[in-house]
Length: 183
Image (cartoon, rainbow, N blue to C red; front, side):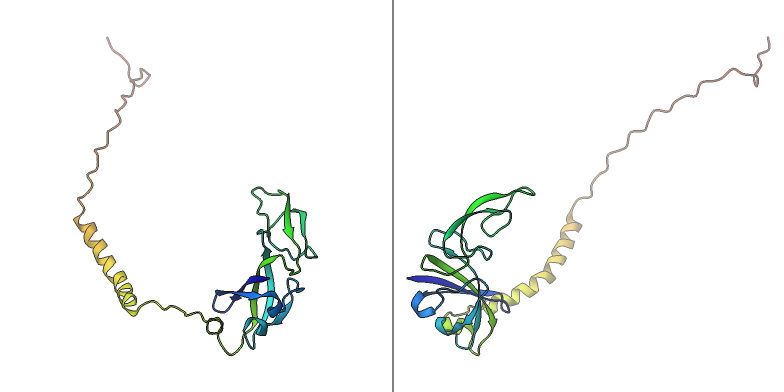
């Protein structure tokens, strides 16, 4: 039985995938959280840790479920369930934490690095962006502010609408003791 092993390197923040035979790798029977030598995967001097995986039907492995079989468990958080409401729980099928023949993919991370890089060990060429594209990228930020300032100068001034004046209220004249009428 073959399965894919996804090796994540926390230092470079990259992941590498390799398809291996179960008998060759020696991963059968390992649990999530177990550490092992990378020699079976072709990574001499590396120490790896199992972080998860999924079976042939896509059901994820969970660390807190023991065994190799698929089980239906009441979940409130992932992997295997992402609630849409606070406090939501749902019964979902998941795979146990032990690697068996039904597992299709295993996720591992590098705990201790070896002398040779993972990309070189797996035969993956790392692509570097062409040098021509790097130079214009540095010049464009300097040119953009000038273009923006010119564009702002070319804009027509916005004419403000005249504000309507509120009608003046006439104060009523009060007849009082200050003014006495003489006839």
